Length: 204
Length: 204
DNA sequence: GCGGTTATCTACATTGATGTAGGCAGGGGT
DNA sequence: ACCCCTGCCTACATCAATGTAGATAACCGC
Image (cartoon, rainbow over all chains, first blue to last red; front, side, top):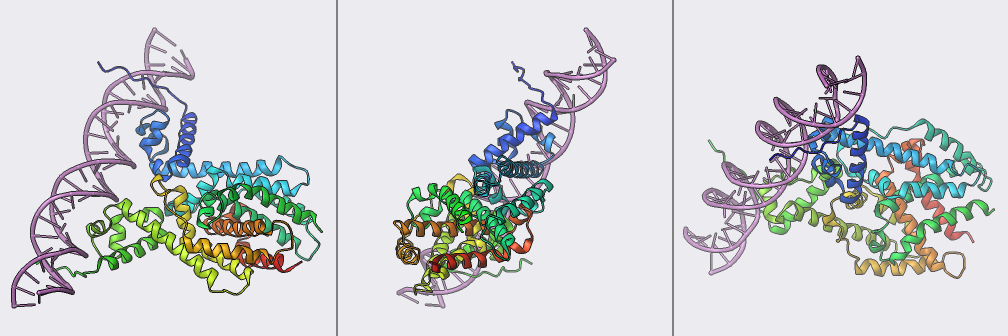
């Protein structure tokens, strides 16, 4: 009887890639509970033993996922900041907001914030990102009203946009209810913030 | 041999309160993994069966914790906004930032963002909070430069502070490394944001 | 085509966490 | 002083998830 099971043989790279993609989807759609080996393996049509063969352990898979998502986050930031290479800082900040707040990335940071202790030592800085920000800061600074410490203000503006983006991605759908606001308010927030930054930079 | 075990008999309210306090501490210090019945029960010196006696199930305990933390979050916001009842909106916004970004509350929102599906329908709005914000918005608005929609701007300012606070609480320690910034920058951010809001409100 | 490598499978062992059963004991009521 | 209610405990049952062992089959090189 035993009908022979269909087997797809992947290269190790293919396999790891498929698995991590499925894992990320499950993280978005089912939260942390979705990140167990059985479900993730099922989601890409393999047995959980095969998954363990590739990643060694559940923790190994999760570490790899953090690493992959962090890489992608940084790549997205780089992409966002580079696709508009001309001196248009407001657009850049809007793109930064977009990159940080969009679904998966905010979930990653929320996970790192609330997840176990084993993950916190990752998330290393990256040279290209450092270079990009090193270039972004003065570009932004020279659009600011003159003053002794425009550089510092520029950095803090970036930081403001980044924290707002993360907060928006993590709790943007819950905060309006929490603060007794109309739901539509939240959706218009990113565009508004972009306009504010624009105005702030072009005003004086 | 069997040494008689010391038993403290609590009222159900005492027990629930102790358990939830311990659970919240464990959430802060060990993340979601710390929220199992055995460890939480051990943390307040009882058997896990006793904990289940009070909350029915692990999910029941977690639901109760979400509810309690949400209540406390709202109470903290109310407290923050009321302890300075005079018309000093910048202080209010700073207090709001403080209330939202401080450890436990940001962890709660991160948890809700990444946790299972069973929790998302809680977090109901609350009448006193609605009243407070209804009062805060016009107070803030009349400090803004005159214009057709100061109310809307006031709301968005509040929303900006709130998202920034949540993002700061969730990822404030990781963002500097991610964005290749000096670590000290993050610590000075809340105070800076407060000053900015002050300046924005008293300027024109 | 043949063989070796290894990705993949099934089946099982193990662990940890959840939930249950039944009895013990603290404290208030009478 | 007694009794009852119920909070509390020990011990066990169960289940889900992790990880392991050994067999099998897909592909690549010869």
